[in-house]
Image (cartoon, rainbow, N blue to C red; front, side, top):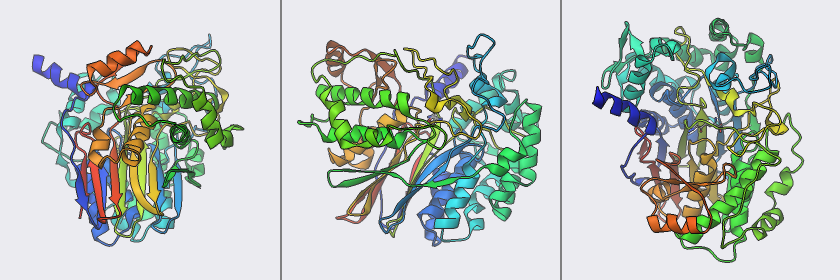
Length: 558
Ligand code: DON
């Protein structure tokens, strides 16, 4: 029994001490959180598909082999570099159902009903993934849509050996049937828990994917799938209707573009806060008089102070710009404003965060990123999520896929900001049809109009900072991909006012010096699970790596 509880514990702490390696390719590369999914993407590249095609095949396969975060019941963001120097993005973020209200998660005293914005069917946003993948293919794909789902369907229908990471979670769900009643039919076959190494077949999901393969996004938003989705959610007191699904649209948006030395940086616009926040931080870094040595005390202090500034603005101003007025956006992105923020930083002592006028909410830590590059220089950086691991942990056994709990990303208590990290600013309060603010930060960095870095990560608000530090490691410090991904990272999000650091990675002397400067420190087992591709224009080789913290991650290339 003792060893069993240790197994369960490690699942949720996600220990992993392996070190990731660089992989190389000349003609195409896919990095994702599942080796099956990376392989599925590579097959598409080899069959003549472009990076967009491959990213779609990878994403659908992740929905089968990495249900922790891969999904068709959630949403995400995708940046596409066309290979001809053009960059565009797809926003397929979930939307608040039409029947939602700004205080739907509050009790009669105006307090948050504990857990209601994450653990009930009300937490489910209208899913966007199928629309996003379908629309991106319509406009940028090269080979037939049907082909892109073949491998995912095969893996769902015939099964695959359940990896240890999923097996441990499934075991935990099986041990807690009262807490996770809707997960039981997901993890059991003929009433028996599927265990490590046993073939896990998902016939219902295979059927759902076949319909999407045949009819495209219509199957999901208008057809039988939509009807069953609505019927099922009604049994759970959910509020998503056929009208919500019919109205869902992915949006092609202009990326947030900035420059940094010889590089062009492309990030997601709102409702992802990632593009704005990383751009702001890179702009501040660009104004530094002295570049600190990588890994030095001064390096981490500078990072923490820059993060503090960007995260305060994020909390104060950012939300879905289609619904909220964001009057400060151009200013936030300007180099002049970054210089002003930087001038305010004390390079000797820790600054102070206070919450007199703003408020932040806790986010989950489970999302997934994939990076793809093909031989023509087309690249895709895509991050998708169910919000928490396995989302709201509900699924219709007839459909076979899990639903998100993304409504938890809205500011649930309007007007309330606390030092522990709750935000209540109006830009991100709930409105029918609005998209919740995200931290997902897929990025593409180019040099001479050609992809240089294709990067992203899970990790809630830590995503923004892990991506920021990985961009710095590659553009400023010339680190290879795996080394940039594995480099010790920190996280500061304004409130709570402390530096989060990765266990075992930073020297005790560095931590001590940071404390002496006045920083409070908090340890975490890891920050982010990056997937990245770096391109070397001189050798013509792509260099890819998947974070050692990603238990089933892998890079496929040729
Ligand atoms: O969109 C967001 O920012 C969050 N729902 C993402 C959650 C997350 O990254 C958890 N990750 N590891």
